[in-house]
Image 1 (cartoon, rainbow, N blue to C red):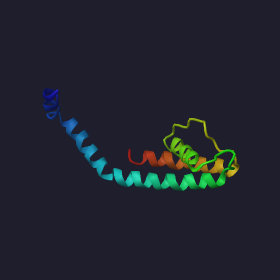
Image 2: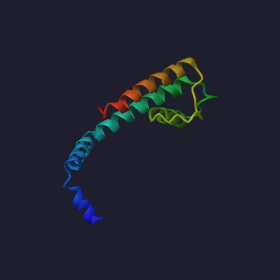
Image 3: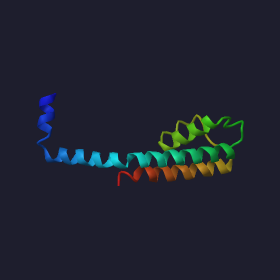
Length: 104
C-alpha cells in the first residue's frame, strides 16, 4: 500500500486532484453553514405552513427538508397544503442549484 501511495505522487493528474480537494475543503465550512441555515429556515416555514395532522413535529419537518435538499425524497412525509407544496417546490429548486454551485 505504501509503495502504491509513493507511486501515485509521481502522476501530475493525481497532484492536481489533491490540490482541488484541498481548495474545496477551505470553502466547505461556509457551504455547510449556509446549508444548515437554509434547512432551519425551510423547516420552520414548512412546519408553520402544514396542518398538524400531516406534520406533527419540527423533527418531521426537518426530515422532509433534509430528504428534499439531498434529493433523496423518500416520500414518507409529503406536504398537503398548497403553500407547503409551494415551499417544497422552491426548496427543491434552490437546493439543487445550491448543491451544483460547489461543483462549478
